[in-house]
Every structure is written in structure tokens, then in C-alpha cells.
Image 1 (spheres, rainbow, N blue to C red):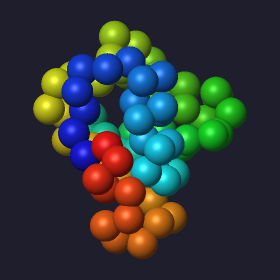
Image 2: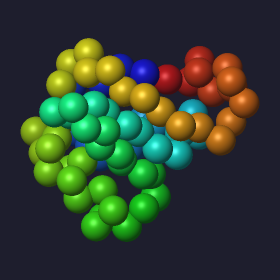
Image 3: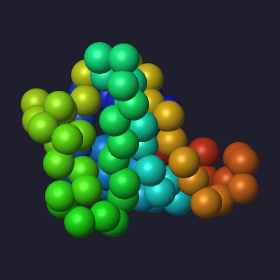
Image 4: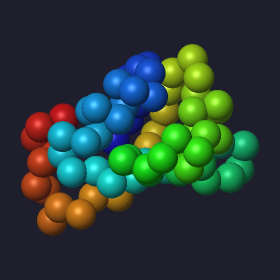
Length: 75
């Protein structure tokens, strides 16, 4: 999954459709996670790092509870 210069709220909405439960981005040599449906304090660091949106073509690693290939066509 690649970011498309969207806000964290847009990324959350896009990721929730295909069953994504977590998003990970490598920032400054450290993995930063965004856990969908978690309380705001859990994702505070991610939101702070990407307050202006996730940059275009930023590689994202996602975790999904759906089997491989399911939901991929929805995004």
C-alpha cells in the first residue's frame, strides 16, 4: 500500500475498507504504527509525524485480518 498524500483521517477511511487493522511507516529509522479503531493516544505519534498528511508514494506496511488477496481490489 502506498500513501497518496492524504490526511491521516483519509488514510484511516481508505484502510478500513479492505480490512486493514494496522499501518506501519518507517520514519527516521524507527517503525511508527497507526492502529485502526484504537484510542487517539495510541496513534498520537503517528498523527504528530503526519499532521500535514502522508507524503505521496510513502511506502506503508499494513496488517490485515483478511486472507491474502481479499479486499485488495477495493483500494
